[in-house]
Length: 202
Picture 1: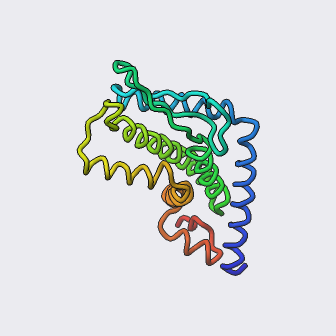
Picture 2: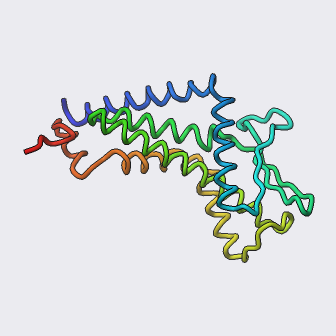
Picture 3: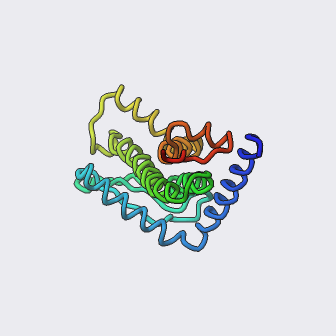
């Protein structure tokens, strides 16, 4: 099989798996969203115990969003709630990572290990996206939870735009995670040449 056909075969498998995983969101949306929300609240509570973070139901149906991310200054009686999409933040990157890993023609033992590592990194990236957004909201003068200088807050704003609000990040970061979790030196060359992904021992 030519290198072009190998790449096309991999791409078709990856796309098919990606679509299946995206559709799987429909029956598991409720529990999956609750699991991510609980996990991210816990992690952010440990990392930034002075900032109260909650997920709240949407007040009214909003296209593209499934919950609200709230940052609260309880002492001042202030709250900032932003509509967000857990599907966009966490599920889509996770689907992309898993589809790429499972479709990669390497031994299944490596795929299983890589899938666990990649899934962990994808979810860590999702929590990081939320954390940057939370820190940005907490540093707003109207909320008064965190004090940041103008320069630092400007950098943070760019980081939020590049991660939390970026569809591109939901595509590019999974690709980077896939490569880091799955490939070893020389794998790509051997796969394109049609050789086994792991050379024979000897």
